[in-house]
Length: 443
Ligand code: GDP
Ligand code: IMO
Ligand code: MG
Image (tube, rainbow, N blue to C red; front, side, top):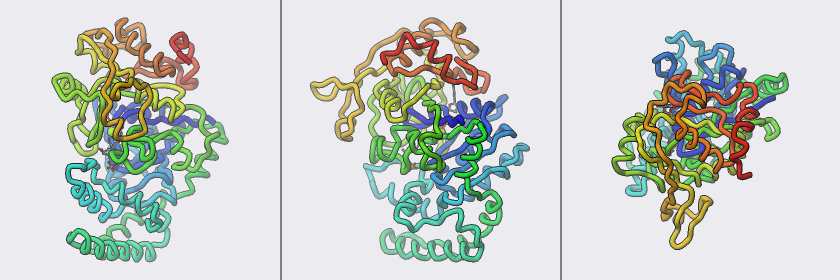
């Protein structure tokens, strides 16, 4: 032990990449457990920016064993490109370990993703069009292709060819869409298999042995709670479970293998794609957050919608993930505002509610109830300890932590590794945070 899960608590892009890279210093293994290359995790190190879509964010540390678990869907072309990019930076990505049971994204999954989302018209989800939904759909329908199928080259190429031919018939009938060249796809995937085969292994056993030997294993979440297939704002969600519990199914470990669960939460909220977003500021305030926070999607480059911090969402994330600690990111982006608003409840008709409503129609009708806090209007990007922060910034953190009932382990005040306030030693991420904030807990 210990197993530490890091998840997003909002609609993704909370800064998980930065936090995971930072924590990896004290880990031995980092495991992605769900999603695919819809994710975009950014690491900024000495001015260089690295965007990762599939490879775990601990890769920059040579001592880390990076693992892609069974719950991930893999586009082999994207993965190989990412490995090559890392090699060009002198980072060995061949040490990557990939689960036999992860499913493979094929070109028709990407095409179908686009056709289906276009077909939704005004109700479009605004997916990343990376084929994520259709690949998970095939997995659930038990007709997917898995990484382990690559072990037998001839059989794998034949399976890919048959799958493309099969989907071609479907595309012709239902979408009048052009066919893919089955031979071409099969040959390309045959080459991907040659490259990736040495990385395939039983990752569940690999992780279990690491935990047994007392190593620190970090389970890296993608997306965030509100994009969870079951618990998010369905249908405006992704096609996997993004909650901490998915680390077990997506990595092949049990609930008792998890010791700590850190929720990454941006000091305000962003969302890419369609769907309800109660605290959205489609105005000057949102534009200012977008601009200063450079809120453009890491995967698709789309402008992210921005809004005030939502405590109803965070409390929901605390409950759904049993969070043990928070990593609050992008606090520096709020330095520009005179006054900050935090949504503490929703008004739904005549009622004020403090819990995320399960009925989608209700959530879409919720109006935020705000409390106002004073801003600090001072550059905080050089702060390295709590005492460096203006009292208003500390009060803002206390307010969030206290109302959520969870200690803060880490505060991020800029994209670089060193632009971080650690409230602990990494070895015991929670103990000191708990002591620090315990007076604020309502629990
Ligand atoms: P992820 O998907 O959760 O890993 O987040 P992304 O990498 O998609 O988006 C977060 C963005 O914010 C990236 O561009 C990061 O470099 C940047 N970032 C992370 N933490 C901070 C911070 O504390 N301040 C600022 N200004 N930027 C940050
Ligand atoms: P990271 O890991 C933000 C959003 C898409 C769309 C919805 C469904 O970087 O936080 P999909 O392609 O998954 O079927 O799209 O989910 N989405 C993300 N938004 N960050 C992400 O990942 C996302 N991955 C998917 O924009 O609204
Ligand atoms: Mg992202």
